[in-house]
Figure 1: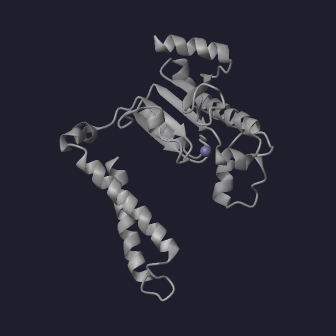
Figure 2: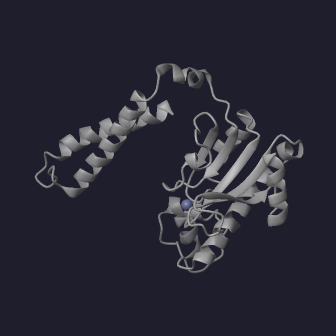
Figure 3: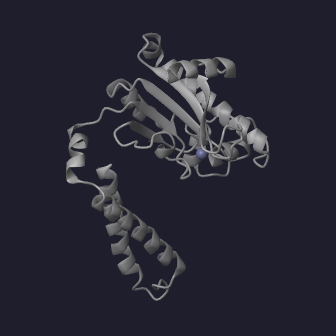
Length: 240
Ligand SMILES: [Zn+2]
């Protein structure tokens, strides 16, 4: 976590340096709306990290410095509405997070493999979410998008249709989660077979499309099982 903040601070410093030179130009003044937005975003990061540092005893980092032993590798969408705290109130040290648009395995395959095969997390959790923009884009014609974005969308499994159709989006989000679980089950077949790894697929449902409450993590796939009754039974056994 600390390296993330270090990177953020470095990025902020670089931006401030560039802003200083940019603001000297007659066009880009301090009142330029884009510059004001950048300044606001940097302030947000700086103040956020100030609060974080003030709120933490230095000793609380001791365990973090020693190493990491996460309980789960999580593949989730980069979407800002999806955060680790939705599935773990205190995710630091618990969750090895791999994030990219559309919560797909292909772009982050090496990172996922590191979590499973080097950090030995017993759980690989793939999390889709309500109103996923990547899924919506993949449901339509995205051939005009930038090549790098297009490549990532190409790995999503969705049904073509209208992104305005909430039920169709819900189905495609679920379909894509199942596709990514299938990918993971093939890749990590030895670990799953040996009982060292469970691969679960879920949808973070902040729209309450599934009627289980806003923000519920709805499991749609447990090691390839997609039957809701079986999943309910399996999850009940895990709760005991
Ligand atoms: Zn998304």
